[in-house]
Amino acid sequence: MKRLRYLFNNKLAALSLILISATFIVGIFAPWMAPNDPNEVHMELRFASPSWEFLLGNDHLGRCVLSRLIHGIRPSVLWVLAALFVSAGLGTIIGFIAGYRRGRIDSFLMRICDIMLSFPGYVMILAIIGILGVGVENILLAFVLIKWAWFARIVRTSVMGYAELEYVKFSKALGVGNLRIMRTHILPVTLPDIAVASSSAYGSMVLQISGFSFLGLGIQAPHAEWGMMLNEAREVMFSRPEMMLAPGIMTVVFVSAVNFFADAIQVALDPKLRTNSSNRKYQSALVAEKMRRDEVA
Amino acid sequence: MLVVNGVYKSYSRGGMFSSDRQQILRDVSFAYKQGECLGIIGESGSGKSTLGRLLLGIEKPERGTITLHGESVENRSSRRGRISAVFQDYTSSINPYFTVEQAILEPLIRKRNGREVNRSKIERLLCQVGLSASFCAKYPHELSGGQIQRVCIARAIATESSCILLDEAISSLDGSVQMQVLQLLKDLKDTFQLGYLFITHDIQAAAYLCDRVLFLRSGQIEEIVDIAQLRNVQSPYAQKLIRMMMN
Ligand SMILES: Nc1ncnc2c1ncn2[C@@H]1O[C@H](COP(=O)(O)OP(=O)(O)OP(=O)(O)O)[C@@H](O)[C@H]1O
Ligand SMILES: [Mg+2]
Image 1 (tube, each protein chain N blue to C red):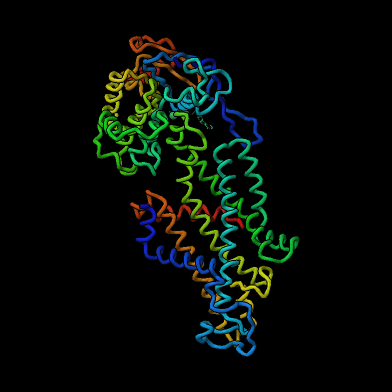
Image 2: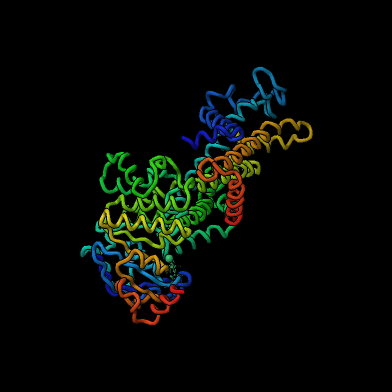
């Protein structure tokens, strides 16, 4: 509870959290929230300026930009979140096994991770699109396949450090079960690492999926997606530059909110960082450094 | 009570494919009697902490057996409530998310399999190690090293086990606090009939607290002597250590 309170005392974090959750809610209830059908064509309203019926105006086919933006939340934000959960969950489990068990199993799992991480991320995604075809599902699948190894590496390093600590040894000496030790002693302290890693990965995944849709490899027309809306706007970049604003600003604002939140969540989850602000800078520098070394994709 | 028989331990030096192993403990055998205080003395790197981890059942010996009341210490259930520990590094000896109360509660909950342990018991334990009840709600980063070490001692005696392994429990404290904690350990020993396995490189502290001392040198036992016979040790290594202490 104290941790949550910290999040709300930090204004930037609270604002980011509100923005992120509002986006989620609007995305989940998109069909009820959107004022119009996102795919309904009104050729007579091509590039119309904002009106009371179409609050953000209309695109090159006269479709409602606001409705498309709202429906675009699902692939751009929510499906990516699902992929993030799957890959972070998988990575956490594998990282825990490797870091806690150590020995052979650790070496074996880490070699697999090394292999996964030795492919550049974009090349992997393009290869999977090449094999399975164009589509968001395939990009999401590619995300899971690539990112779990990255998460496993981070979680394993962090678990290894914590499993050596004296209070874990004390619990082991008392005869506490391994699962219980992991749950009560290791998971809470690795959680900040997992949260920071996932929230920063999330920002880059949102950008990537928009990027692939922009290139036409992600979601297929007529479904709405922020990256694809940008691509459609690109064709009229010089005559109608304002068409880029809505999807562009939305993407930038959302990704920035995710990143601010990522920073705040790390401080909120760590009892030591909360009391000592000079420590905080040091710690985030440390994590940033760790991520830089780990992020191959 | 605790019987160590022909224990060997080594760690691999290289990676997965390396067969290069570093021998840490060689043919260690001794018996620990209930209620006694046995000092384990050796230089840095002689394998004292490794031996301690094996005695606690955290790691497995490669060869040989360690039994507690006739059962192998590797069985979790056999050591539950019988052996407890205080470690060297007080900075990580309490979970940073736990308050002092929760930390002391952990072994109690284990033992009772229930949560009816009341607060007065914890306050009594804190009082026994010389801390006031107001420490209950504090987090470890709010305490000094000596205070944390006292909380750890309270946590160790909370298990009500008859044997406590102290791995350099006072080495990281400064002089006067060291003396206070030693005094505390001695008092607790008398009031609760506790036995200690006291791992240290400080012969003076061992001489103050222990009934017998065991000299460990690069993983092998040099000599085991009663504290009264400390001046008449036979092995040159033990003689050297004692001479160094005298100066
Ligand atoms: N987990 C491990 N993996 C590999 N080598 C280890 C491991 N633990 C200890 N060692 C090695 O075992 C040797 C003995 O270590 P140990 O910690 O038992 O010494 P010690 O007697 O407790 O020393 P100190 O007085 O400094 O605490 C050291 O050379 C160390 O490098
Ligand atoms: Mg040691």
